[in-house]
Image (tube, rainbow, N blue to C red; front, top):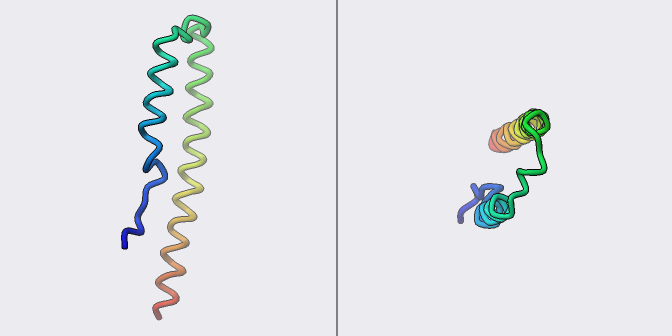
Length: 70
């Protein structure tokens, strides 16, 4: 049984399509360079927090599994 299923399994295609549609519609013309920098800063901050929380949770799951084995 395959347990290591990634969060993005089955979602990568949809994410790619959404990004492509945004690019094709010219949505970037409504965002200035300063706004884009702010958006990217906020995105990376949130992504970093989410990755840290997920990594911590995942590590604790492994620890609990090891403790159950003892």
